[in-house]
Length: 83
Image (cartoon, rainbow, N blue to C red; front, side, top):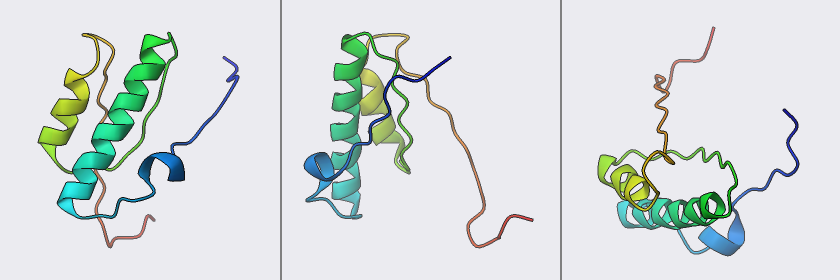
């Protein structure tokens, strides 16, 4: 499989956001909406964001069509360097 295009969501979408709970919620909402636009255009979109709040992930899932959202959870321990 060859990727035609790799893009990142950056300053234009999230430039005014920090790391407060409210900003994290808005960040995930914005990225979810952009991912929905891509999915509606028929594109496969991978989004890798830290989203510690279950409610934010649920809202992102709800804006997608059924079957278009797959959540992958990767847990790692902070403060322990990989060996």
